[in-house]
Image 1 (cartoon, one colour):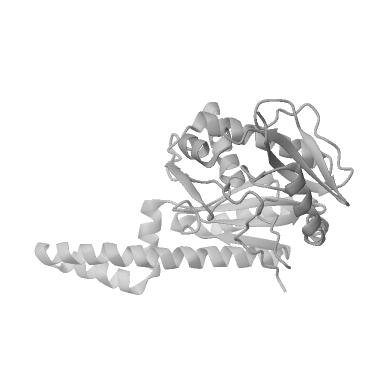
Image 2 (cartoon, rainbow over the protein chains, first blue to last red):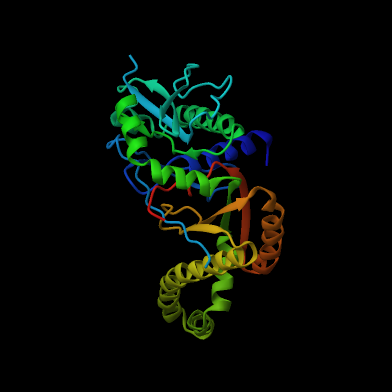
Length: 63
Length: 261
């Protein structure tokens, strides 16, 4: 993998983490980078209810 | 003109402001809104620039989104240097400082508990990737009905083989979904058994078709053990075309939940 595609991959990983999922879907892009063609990026943007922080996933803790 | 607030993170009051970080709008304005024992880090932004319509329209502009991602992440990294934070995802906005302050006051017990829980921990992500060809072959080996169909095709006439191949494809899709979830559950269990930590698994369906992943909340000094486990699991699943990509440490977005624990 080239240096620039590594940087792009790292940016996609970052976006994948910091964009929320599962609340309001604003758009979706399928991204293909070099030989990494199966990393999809779902872009979900939360905005409408600005006074609420919505979280959908629940953590599990081992008992 | 800035009239709403973009919120990066919540921390304990007294948490230091990030130094020399570019704000989300390209300015250098990062402010703190304090309420009792809590503080939130914000940048005032324009409600037109950050309206749903504008964001929707620009969501596929990777350059713009990249700049947002880069700035958000840099502020987050700088804040994390100053201690524990509750990181918020990109595009968390409040109507005003006042409404944010009210939210901090109303949720102060939850946020304080959450900060205690995140102290000294980091988030890591284990993405489970499937090689289409090897995984497809592995499915035939793993699932009896697929193996039987495959053998039937080998000895069938060309017309019948065509129909059977269609059936095999459909069966493979169903079996693939089930087997993926099984692999994911096995890996999550292995992580919990070895590290006794919190995890959140996200299936391919939850990730809009992207590879499934397991988010792990680990003590700072335990990443070597997770890496060791990744190597061990990678060896176990490699013949099935399953690889494990470990990334991190991330701000603990997945675990920044505000539910009653």
